[in-house]
Image (cartoon, rainbow, N blue to C red; front, side):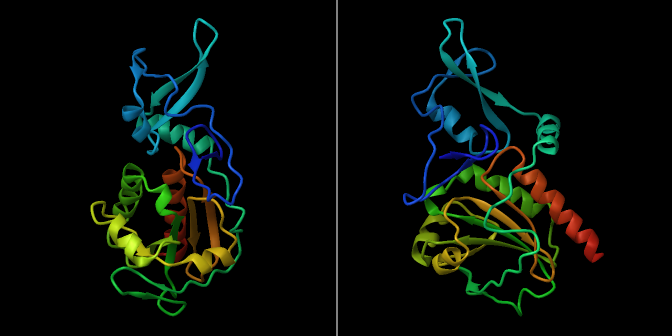
Length: 233
């Protein structure tokens, strides 16, 4: 796991990439705001969302301790505004990306079918599968209703069989495009997850790496800005 911009932001890295160890793990002492020690079975899933983070402190004995912090919507937004996610080194503003692939439903995506659309891309590995985190992305999709000018794509290295098994019990509202190993290798993607937004001309207007308190806020903000530029709702 790699910390990208705060203790609340994590990325999954394949075994061939360098990995930095977080200062806490499943055996660490995590306490809630009431002072109760929280077992990993409880706090682990919380760190997969954008509504909690873990703060490192020292207890009265001078030993490292970690506190699970719940964020109100107001506090979450306040933090997000001040601390935008770090940009992905693979996708630079102004780059043009060409996508080709087929989703699990058989729909073909190409330069022609994606023309004049705002494309929101989520790139990740099945090893980085977090059902609770997916719910945050599902809420993002829902917030834009049935806007036909926006397409949400989830690009996976994994093959179709793995993807189907993965999402059998956990629906994801992005359009899932498996088998993208060659494309992601071409883009030199080696750490996950990554989010990218393309404008209606297929040009990168935003990218980020990892997942944390700020991720969904900034995706929503940049999508809304793109919608306004298109003059559509």
